[in-house]
Amino acid sequence: MKKIILAMFLISLGAISVNAALPQTRIIVPLPTCTPASPTPRSTATFSVTTTISPIDGVYLVYHECNPSICRLEHNVTMTLKGSTYQCTVTFTEADTTYVEAHAVIKSGTTWIKSLNNTIYFSTNNNNNSNNTNGTGKKSPGFEVVPVIAAIAVALILIRRKRS
Image (tube, rainbow, N blue to C red; front, side, top):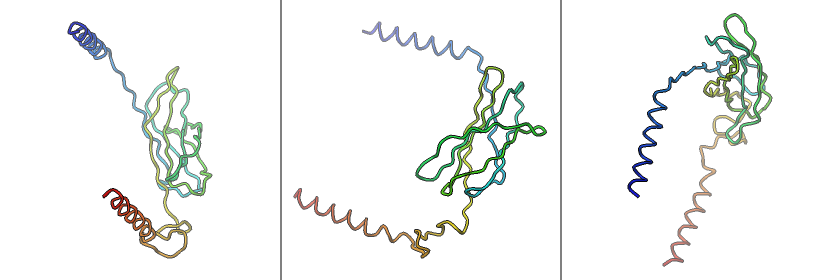
């Protein structure tokens, strides 16, 4: 048993040392930037990516329109070179979008390189239910949860009485 454990340990050390000896090339793709920085739902925005990767066969923007409950289907848009920056214009389609998750993908030869996700939060406008209005237009600072908390407290008291 000890020999098996020792053999497994030596094999794992060998795999680690071989992996560490291989040259690691890391290519960084910059995050896509959005103009305006805080768009509104159903508005148009321009995304940009500036990169020094060469050669480039294509740059693509991949994004999801999201709200706190769900992220919608992925959109894939081809970006075009304008000066030294790749750009594309996007029109957001969902009225309840509160943020967008976007990343850039660059095709260089046979390699696809993906950037990290950039989360772009939408600005709030006066037409949506901001300022804690709970959809009624009247301000309510969270008192709608009081009955829920009271029901939980009653349930806990009843459960403790049954156990004793």
